[in-house]
Image (cartoon, rainbow, N blue to C red; front, side, top):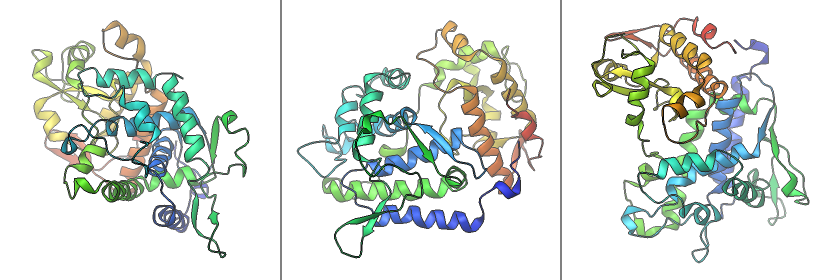
Length: 370
């Protein structure tokens, strides 16, 4: 549903928000990389759970912990250019960052790596609990602290993202944080800018504290490339679900291998490596669609499928690995954000093979909560 203009954040507010976020990156004290992870985590959750209204947003800290795990999972493996060494994520070479030591035992490269990640994201396991504790100990209070004060010693806290107690007493009882009014909307509208800023600053920090890697051009891909999940194994399930036809053209596919598994919501715009976002397409359609958002007609079919399909049960019955982490309400939130941005920026939609056209405003009706 469209947000009333009067409830939206203004361009001036967005610019001020961007300036204050930039201050965190340029003036904040970084003894580890946790602040970078926190900013990206909050941005992703704002996309998944928030709206474009200027309302506040309550966030479960376990959800923040899951985002931390996703971010550090790949970085907890040895960096290829360093042999068996891990990238230093804090300033204490003798004591690796807690997130690295916590995840390194589970994130070793193997065919089972993605399955294990899904398992540990699935519930309040020890990994989730320990990650939440790390967030509360090392970043929750420090994220918004920037610049020296007038006495040149203490540092100021500009609590523009969320408020927190001044004392850490009882910190282990904290289970949620509340983004202030307008913050989630700003994080959503500025996501591409904020993600680019944070990733660039994070990579720079890593280079500064891991001088042995030099100017290795593969660093950013290792940190943020997000190793592709084995999506081909979903082809047989999708083939059966789609009655052996291409999702987009409805052309008959002779077998699952004749099609390709496509991210309906383009992976280049938001990484949603989950079955709820997969469709089976002919190779021609998949190649032609590329990173475009799909037209309203395709969105309606995709949304109808996900609103009516018992995804976890279906996946389990199909023998697919792991628990399905993303629910339809979350996927719908990501889709709303993506299509809202496409409409705002006049991004053309893929109408079919060889056809690109204007995105019509009927897309909203496809995503009405149901």
